[in-house]
Length: 279
Image 1 (spheres, rainbow, N blue to C red):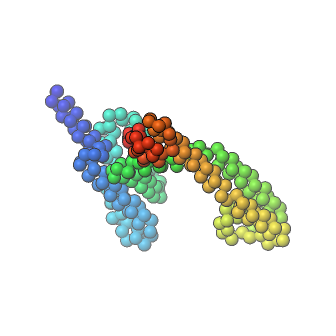
Image 2: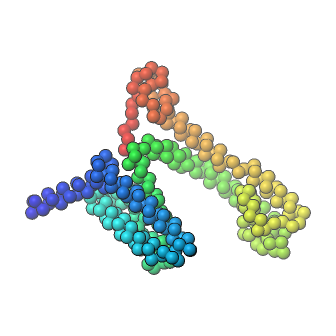
Image 3: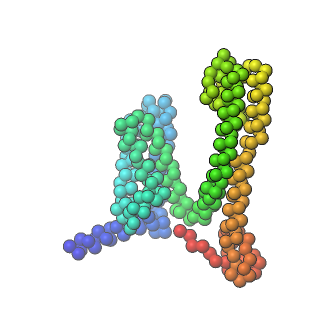
């Protein structure tokens, strides 16, 4: 009994070292094979959406897709099996993405068209950051994520104000132009206003009256005036995040900050800076 439990323990450790390990030869090989497999599965999904190729090779696409899905399902099960903290892995970012990468294939048995959601497997390629020792770039991603999170209220207020303006302009265009000129309802007029404000300009609906064209000109000018506001909000917040990150790297010798994130030595006195351990 003891020998059997020891064998299972050794098996779990070996699986964990291979599947989750990024420094061992087996772990590196497994990660590279996994990444190439993910890329192949994404290419299959993309090619299957082309009607000409799908008509000729649909059988091969389906066979390859299900082969890869079974492989990813087994891999997901092994990750849960050998993980020291299973629930932590299941609810982690990679755990959720790993699950979402296999669900569409099984849902496609009941709902047509869902299989194209397999494109989400591309998110799993983010593991290449760890495989190629590019973990430092993850901190740059964290700066972007924190900047978006910090500026979410300002951006939400901005978009709410734009929506209010779009509703007002849309209602005016509905009153001025009317259904005979394509503005068949207030929602349709709001759609035209949003398309115009964002400078997309599909041209499917155009004002025909003089007053309508005046309102359209005001909408265009409003669009040019406010189109860069979200970018400015995000840029300002990102600058604050970068400065905050630099301020956190304080030299223990001269107590001065302002160093680059990847700096190893103080630019003022040359003493080693405290290095943050990479995950």
